Length: 93
Image 1 (cartoon, rainbow, N blue to C red):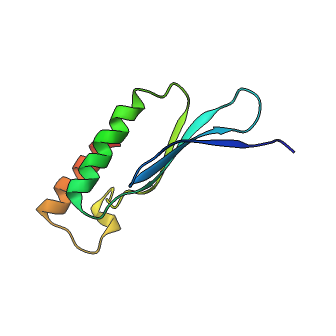
Image 2: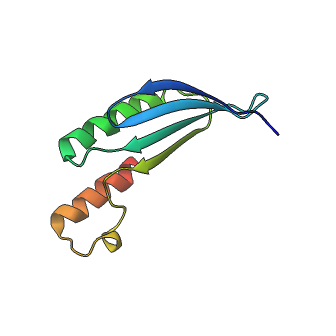
């Protein structure tokens, strides 16, 4: 069985980032996200994660709850505001 090492690189209010080492030299970065439901806080999260993207030179997986939707199909209601929010989130990802 292969050993697994997890080294926490950073823990913030909306995310935790770790370097995962499953053995050998195959290290990668994992960020678990739980985005704040308030839009102004999610804006900060996007800025912070974008800044960190320039730091990591290993494969990086972002996963979790971003408290945003990819398309209007994910909601039972929508409108111009939701269309803009979906477009903004899609552009970010």
